[in-house]
Length: 154
Image (cartoon, rainbow, N blue to C red; front, side, top):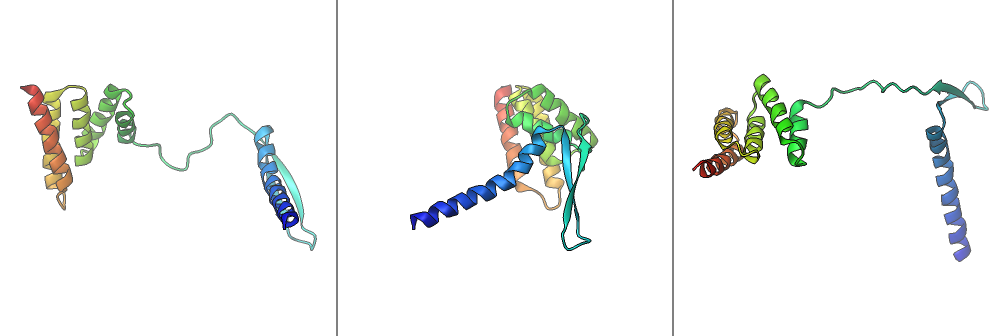
């Protein structure tokens, strides 16, 4: 039984090596290899086409993240809150949504801009109530930010 296990594990290792070797080779060379399979005959041959590697970035297939995504990351990671606030203000100036306005209120609260946090949370609450259907979670969360800002203003 142990002989079978040894041969089986050696076979698995050989297959893993065979699959990983071309990928490792392509990463270490200056050329990317593209395999073109020709199935015109019984013996299918494989040709390699060498493409020079460029320093230019590849073309993006999707749009870059919006400013509110960056702001949410900066807020969650406790990075530059002033930059996060600037991005949220930019987003809310273009298209105010209650979740973004609420995020701006939370950032203002963290920056100890209690008057701004109070006003922004009130606006988020109004937008959450005006949404169809109204979002009770954001209404409650906005009221909590209003209460925190009011307690700090006194």
